[in-house]
Image (cartoon, rainbow, N blue to C red):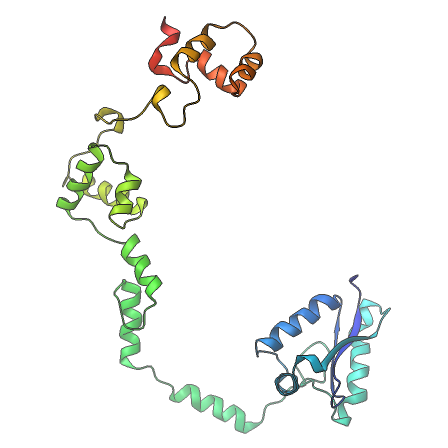
Amino acid sequence: MVKEPVIYRIKNIIDNRFYIGSTINFKTRIHKHKTDLNNNRHHSIFLQRAWKKYGKNNFVFEVIKKNINIKDILKIEQIYLDKFKNEKILYNICFVAGNCMGVKQSKETLKKRSNTMKNYKRSKEWGVNISNAKKGINTPGMDKARQLYIDKYTKRLSKNKALILINEYKNGKSWNQISKENNLSNKTLRREIKRLVDVNLIPKIRSSNSYNRNYSIGENHQMAKLTEKEVIYIFNNKEHKSIIAKKFRIKPCTVYDIKSGRSWRHLNLCQK
């Protein structure tokens, strides 16, 4: 539907009462009305009660005035409101177009609201629970998912535990594997080890290449598509890289990496 200024109404086909409004986007505005009514939060309590009583199938959303200048849209809406407000058939709670200046609350309602806010006091348990939640301490009312998040991402490691995990890393396990086995996030694990290193509780960890780690390289790697003989053939072949790539069903950039020594470096082809 094309965006244009219109006057619309939401009509109850059972008792013929209706709500009047104005908009420049009828489709979006009606969608907003339906969402609020279905979620029991519409600003018009009269329309909300009728929606619950008669059901959504007994209401019609229709345009009653088109071809309006956008500058005059509130004036025309006001004409409709003034025309029907004394007949008691409107669901509108405000009879001033474009704002809620027409909504007046009684002195009793204002006193009730004032007394409610003055006499409302939080219990001591409520304060303790809020304090514990911010500190990360489990309380009976805390959501389980939040507690699991706190346990996983704010856990502290002791010196002995960190040394055990570092030994696992030296023996060939990756940080991702270690973190999963110990119910830690990878970020938390690295942060805690760095913290213990900074305060000299554990020695600094060397790079992974300095440990005797059993990595599968070359043609033994699970993702390898070429053998060492094929790689040597590609390196010594003087044909264009696109032609070589078609022969072995690989990408031209893979051929380039082999010839430039970026990949398969353990063969030391560039030094021969």
